[in-house]
Image (cartoon, rainbow, N blue to C red; front, side, top):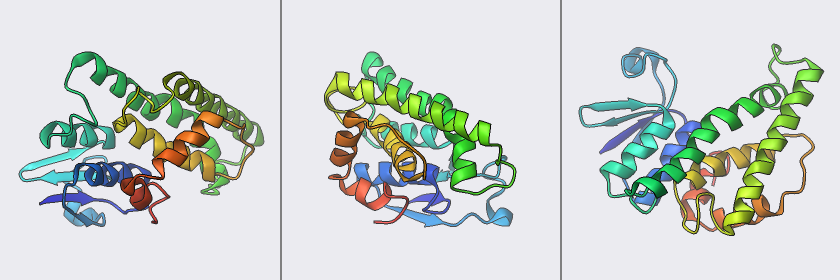
Length: 200
């Protein structure tokens, strides 16, 4: 059975849990224990997936692996073009979008004493909202899901990011396509289990 290491409230762990739910994969989840798990990931962060003799880290990589290994073509197409469209939005989430929200989230949600500069909070919030506007425009173009007419891994990773954006105490523009998409996501059992900040 698959083993997933990491707390269920972690946004990156929830990517993997939600993917498993969509694929119908049974798993065991363990909390991170530095003494027991440090050799699995030299970065000492979660999630880590253990599948037999294979240990993987980096949440988006784990999600791609699960789809490739366990017949998840519906979530990650095998054909090069459609697959690349899904992966470009996954990579955008991990680089552009995450970079935008990091300072604001650490200040407004985590209350980090190292993130108290008002100008940087405002700049991060504005960048976060601008990036969510890019997502809104994409959803307006597809009229359905992030990468096109079908639900994919891109919707899982960006759905969790959108949930974080929605729950952070800051001013947000009205993005109707994002709002409609979040409503559609909430109809999925995997989202109800793992998309709401780790609580059904």
